[in-house]
Image 1 (cartoon, rainbow, N blue to C red):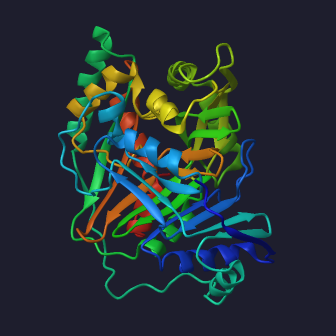
Image 2 (cartoon, rainbow, N blue to C red):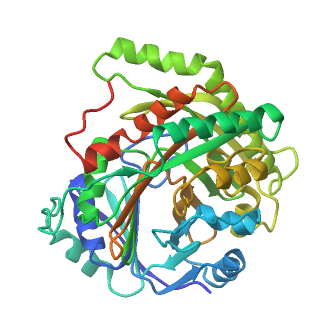
Length: 438
């Protein structure tokens, strides 16, 4: 069943101002999802910016979530926006988490929006099920093209680590003993930083994050009183027709934007790094294996190996794997075969996820899951939820997590420093007095 939407396309001169107006308008809805590539022009970019607001229908599932999602997707051939929580691993790999859930995002949530707004360069398309596109555009344009003012209730956020540096290093050493015994090859180990009694303006916080760290898979996702403020540089999966791609990240070096010569040296050093190449190859092999479960035999290939891409705070090593899907493969078939993404687990996937539950001290929840959209006809694009602030306004609980791939040759002290590097932009947003890592 496909809903008949009324659509129209408009020309907009100042697209950045319009995006701000879109956000101010979208945040009036209790459910919205704003996806923005932040003007990155990459080989696999298609839609510059996409927004879904309001929920005509939705699925909110915490048990048998993939079965329910499959039935929902088959019944609703329309735009769908939403997320997959990392803890969906309880269904894909039968591994449950015993850690406390402080944020309360569901395992799976997808909604069929009342209105979809799409931005491509200076053209804006509106697909509406509830009102005329002209009225939608008028309502957006009459809003200010400026960030919302700070709310009086906002107060400084006091961030605490869930584990100490000593506990982190001790855990890394224990993980390396598992690697030495052959239990696994590489494990993505994460730690949480959190704040209780946190009051903030989510939209303003997200826009501060974008000013400091714009990234190509950014999202502002509101699910009633729960917010995801995401500055992700990583794609999980994209489907176009029968073609599917994954772009895992493994390998991170800091940038030196004050010295272009040194910055170029750091970029080259990442490309030459044997440790980072080793981690990257491991995840590429894992993704190839995952995609081979749903792709035609012989079609899975590595389009780019060890690509080095630069973002505001870091250089990243990104590889691209693609394949041609078998006939009749559904979205949930692909999720079952590939989720959680290998870049956030390690290899072999099941073994490391068991160890992750043993050594991490926080439930990941929506962190290291995915947020994105499905278009009518079945194409989709989803990110990896990293470099993100998660916030439950009702519980006044704020959280962000950072991690990295651990191998036998990892230096625990340097791995801890890499975690802090990845969290630099978030820390600057929440505490502007923090000095960036030199």
